[in-house]
Length: 225
Image (cartoon, rainbow, N blue to C red):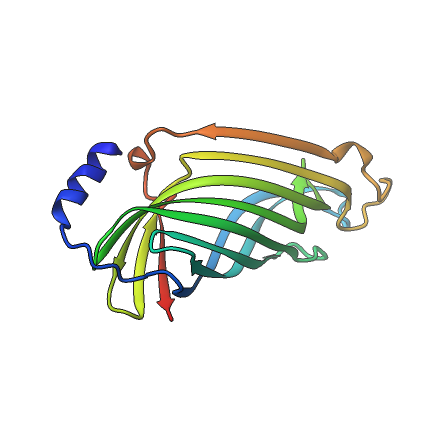
């Protein structure tokens, strides 16, 4: 990563700053994903598990706002909404609401390019639907996450820029799923499933995010005012 930074710095010798102290930026993300997979699900009519193609449709939107405290330091926040619709009969949609704050520091900024690191602290709350064996289950979910990502920004003009961020160099996340219950009525089973509540805590250090595939890359369009 250090070698790449040196190459980019040598290529962009101008020092005119495009987004300076006092500038504000609006941006965000919009996502749509549709996927299908074969799953064994419970059939109330035959009272047995049957193989069925389950289609999930995911939609998300997350606007964010940045304010430049100095020419090289920006702070901001975001909110996010997401939903997942399932083709399983009787299963409600999964929903999620999130918000967070972040800080960004530019290690290099020119008239057209910027290289930065960004640290984000985020919180997410939602209702999740998933399968335990072949039983559809719904549960409450809470996630707390901290991540540090590198990025490269290109300033199209004084009003617009695009940026590419890579995978987290450093990340920490705590996830709790609890209060689970069956999403549909199944004869002979209690609606409450007390043994499905659990917590997960993860820490990841990735010293070479540039070596990953294209899945972690994120492209964002920004409006400056």
